[in-house]
Amino acid sequence: MDLSIIIPMYNASGYIDNCLTSIKQQTWLPNQFEIIIVDDGSTDDSRDLVDNWSTKLPIKLLVQENQKQAVARNRALDQATGQYILFVDIDDDLDSKMIEQLYQNMPGFDLVESGINKVFVNADGRVTNREVELPAIQKAQSQNEMFKLYFGANTECDVGLWNKLFRRALIEKNQLRFTNANFFEDSLFVGQYLNLVAYTKIKFIKQPLYHFYKRQGSTTTSFHQEIDRLSTAYLIKCNELLRQTDLSLIEQANLMAALKLRVWIYTIHHHVKYDPQWHTRQQRRYLLNKVGLTSSFKTSVPIKYRLAFWMMLCFTATYNKLYCRKYL
Image (cartoon, rainbow, N blue to C red; front, side, top):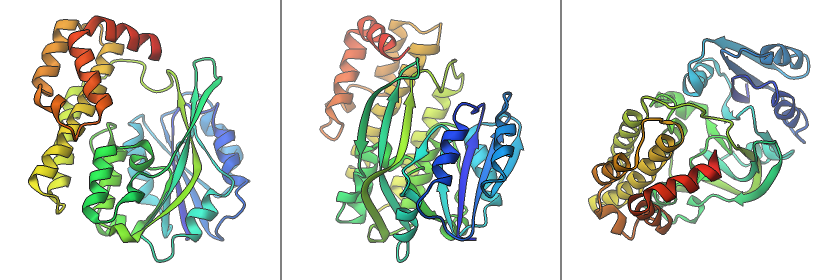
């Protein structure tokens, strides 16, 4: 088998046709490929729609109780037989030349990464903006530089799964799977995979071949009780990963400071949006305890996160009101 395309799915009836059509209409597909769709306990007619597509594409449909994307992807990896692995999200779609470009650039490399086209969609389903993002790690001139860019810039293009072609043999040899429940599990997986390959074995395609839809209000809609614990676990695992690199202790500390600030800001945003018990005094204590003032002064931390820290700390109520107005 040449290629396994892995797609987790949950209540995706409105997106299935668009996603699978973009695969069907590729300018080129390998002779032997499989599409493994894992239904994560859908309650709509997603499975029926996928069944209809089974006559047009080589689809293997797996069904499980709702356990989120990490478990779904792991189950698909257990079933995959392709030489290469491509992950796709069911609510996204592919440029017509994506598979051809990724696959035919893979010989001699262990990873191929393309750019992405971020498509912003409001609650009414209207496209409000588009933004092209190209790989940041392509600027690296060494293994250490690659990790600095990966953890420092931490762009969606680099940490995302879906714009990359992976070697399944490397994944299986090193027993890579998705961990940390459903919290930044894709970023961890990609980081662990990068740690297995030389930066010279990564091929970059400077075109946005994957269309990544950012839909307002389409993912989390309720408070995740375990988000604080998962944030801590994620940071511990990232720190462990950095320790496996050749970066100096100072470089590791600077990267962790930037990552810590980003993760706790993300976590606070979740509390602000969905935690009815959240209040401004709690937010200030949280920032000082989880992040601390020192990180906000580090030049290794991008300026936008340092500014966000001080806005969240000093103008808490105003910041939270503006944030909710924009994202809720």
